[in-house]
Image (tube, rainbow, N blue to C red):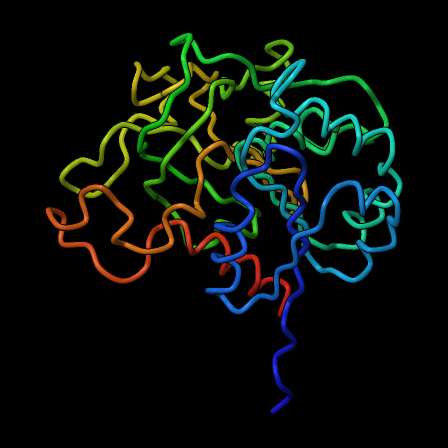
Length: 274
C-alpha cells in the first residue's frame, strides 16, 4: 500500500494574529503538517505558497483591526499577493479563513469568489455586531454542506465565537439571493437543538433573535464558501472545539472524545489525500 502523503498547511500570521497555535494543534490532530508563516515572509517570497496544499488564515486581530477588521491584511493579500493566491486557489488547493481570517478573505476578494482578488469591489462584508460590543460566547450552527469539502457529513455543531465585527451583510438583496441559489451559504447560526436533535431556526428564512444570532448577520449567515467549495470562511472558531472537554457543558452533557470542530479540519485533510 502506498503510504499517505502528509498534507502541508501554511498557517498565515500577521501582527495581532492570536489563534495560529490552536489552529496548528487542530491540524496536527488530523495528521497534517502545519507551518506558521508570517505575511512579511510570504510577501518577500510568494513562491513559499508552492510548498503547501492548504492555506489557513486563523483568527485574531491582525494589525489591531485598524481601519476595519482584517482590512490591512486583506489589502496586503489583494495588492501584493493576488496572482500567487489566484494560482493557489485555481490549482485546486484549499483555503480556510477563521473569524479574522474570514474577514480577510471577504475583504481580499477571495470570497464569495465571484470577483478577482485584485478587484476592489466587495459584494459582501463583515461589520460591527448589532449588540455594539464584542461577543464571546458558544453558539449553535446548522450546516448545509452542498459541495463544501470542509463540511462533508456535518449537519450541526457547536462552537465558540469571539468577535466585534461578525455581522455578515450583502451589498444588496440580489447578492443574498445569489448566495442562496448557488448553495454558498453553508453555515448558519441556529437556535438550540430540539428533542429530535435538529438545530432549529437557522435556515428557516426567519432572522434569529440575539443571542442565537450573536451579531445580527443577514439570513443568520455564519460561514460561506466559494462556488468550488474549496474556499471556506466562517466566524466561529472550530479550532477551539477539538476536544469534547473544551465545551462548557461537557460534564453535564456526557460529552467525550473529539469536539465538533475537529471534523472540519479532518475533512480538509481527507480531501487533499483523495
